[in-house]
Amino acid sequence: MQPRWDRINSAEAIGRARRIYYAYLERCTGAAEPLGIVMAGEAEAGTKAGRVVFDLPVLLPSEQFIPLELVRGRAGRNRPSRPAMRN
Image (tube, rainbow, N blue to C red):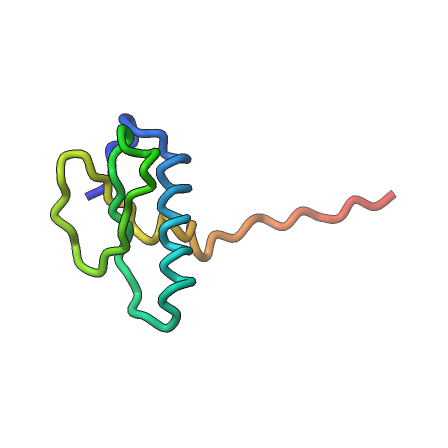
């Protein structure tokens, strides 16, 4: 149930989902872990409409589901360490 990345601005969609998720975290400390975020489609992006969901949602045609893994970023992704440059 991934969004059609070829049809949306993925950076903007994930950024909106993060804002919705972080607002949820501020309001509901200690609450259950959500599965992801459902947001209004690109046409309604200015409305900032969205909600945190705890079960797999049934989406309206204009909605997008962003899984929590994408909202948080990839956990466990280690960057290769670069040796320090010494002169």
